[in-house]
Length: 226
Image (cartoon, rainbow, N blue to C red; front, side):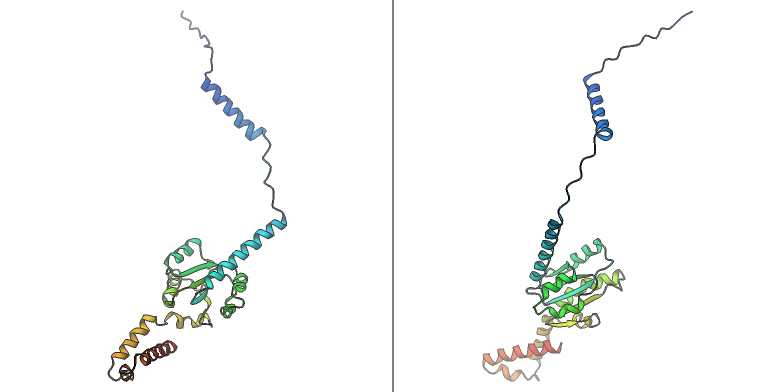
């Protein structure tokens, strides 16, 4: 009869084994025996108010900077728009048009005492603001109107705009969106000049100074009619 003897083999841990055991022990102590780290100290109420006030002042200053040299400022009702949709709108805007999200109260402070005070009727609800620094008004408004139609955002219309000191309600935006560009006005002027029956033909034969004044007056008349 054959009997197999099982002789235990002594275990000699290597350095690698010892390191693994030490690491596991440290992890165990960290998660189960160590006390939780203390929470970070909360800022004092006065500090929080100072930070909030500083941010508001910075927003007002940025809005004032955008108002400088602007041809038109328009509000957009943005409630429900996603971040992705905002990014899509920003990318589609002309280079001279800026989209800014700011509370109505802060925009109200920025326009106070300026020619933009006519914008006050639009300071209701949640608004994003378009600052247009180009005379091409229709091109600046078109990207949002296109996005509105694509996403069927019937409730996210323009809240109002100011152009040349006058307030335009949402119902009057068609006037702004169909406004002829300066290129259109000059094209119309050139067409008039080429016409033999034009009243300006006689002026062309006069002094150059009279011609300049006549052209300026005619362009102004075309702009008013538009």
